[in-house]
Image (cartoon, rainbow, N blue to C red):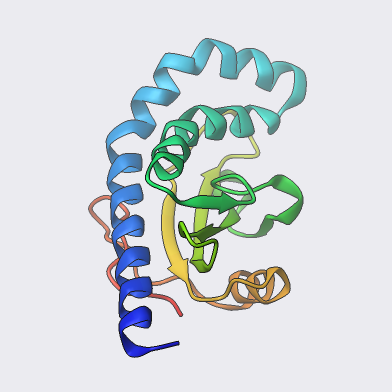
Length: 167
């Protein structure tokens, strides 16, 4: 990959990460509150699937924006449950990591957005907002290894944005 191509790819991923985190920081509480009656109903019947419903409501508009700008997330943004990993935190603040490879208009992969969803297994609650970071890996096995064995970048304590890149 040429130096210019690499710079454009990294700049695009950094911009997407920042944009997505700002969107989450701005929208997550509103989406939770607006959908809380349905989230509660789902939680009563299926427990953790309520968090999946919330993620669909939160991330669908952001994915639609990406697609309208010529980006294709694979799998859907923020990712799919079977490809996600949950190994971190106490039951009251579990962390599940989802991932989605972003492809540009030329169908070449740009990188992967990893989304950290924090949730409570003891009651219906999100202890903090989702957080997003980018990794360079685009191969599913390598992505899985990177998110399980690597530490996420230092996150902004004021709201969750990424300070540094995790590569």
